[in-house]
Image (cartoon, rainbow, N blue to C red):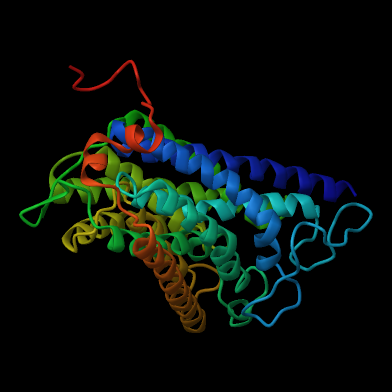
Length: 408
């Protein structure tokens, strides 16, 4: 009973840390975008976490953890009414050592993160209502089905695919949808001039910096909680590898970016930290500290080249979500087959298979959802709305009413 209590308290702390990451995402997104769209981004972030928890309670949790199922799709019924033991624990293999309720809440915090990744990529030009509809379907149905394939004991779990805390299951699932959404939306007005990318500076880099540090703190819960117990050895190792990968990602991204562009770009430094965090997430419990530094370093370098490539193919991602969450998510997942305790050819093939399966599923489903919304209600705001700002047109308010720019 004492061990159950210790495990449960640790999982609750981790749940709170993952919840705190939503503030980090919000700060990062508004900091890297323009003042006139601040309220719109904050509204989306608040909507995602609130509706995400409700959907995960009603549908998602039992889609993702259906107990016995065919490995591809299973559903244990609506709502949280599964049979409990006397101490509130559920008698399933994935849920030992802490209560059913804590398990639901911890997993529910992860669910909302996938749609938050898309929010940043489509910022400043997507209509709010179509985004909300997309978030409902993606968080409520698509993410839990994808999650069940590994974490619910599905076919990828049987194949030996490994994703400790979600480099693919959370970050790439959001990243693939972000790519589809950005392709269907098109770039912001002024992003590309004569085929060349133009910088559209964010309005508050200090807020973006605070957001990244909050996300780094939240990752202690994201990865630390994914041990699913308070095991001292495994938990402490996981936190060390997570921290070292973040530090290495930031430093290498800063160095590579400075070498290529001859300026000390803080936003690249910040995204490098996030890239390192995403990269280590698939194998944080399987890596040595040196492995973690190497994985984070490669993720940091990848960020610079990925951002450049995304600009070259004329995709407009205001916050670098595709580079951070998709590219580094893929890298981190494949790294499990290259570094650490599981490294080997067979493991690498399993990792590659998992990446391919999630790519196909997420691209197809997100395309169907967003393309249907585009054809029925439209997903792009008008030129006037985009130029004047979504805060005024979608919300009728100003995030900073006493600090209006260009006021006459």
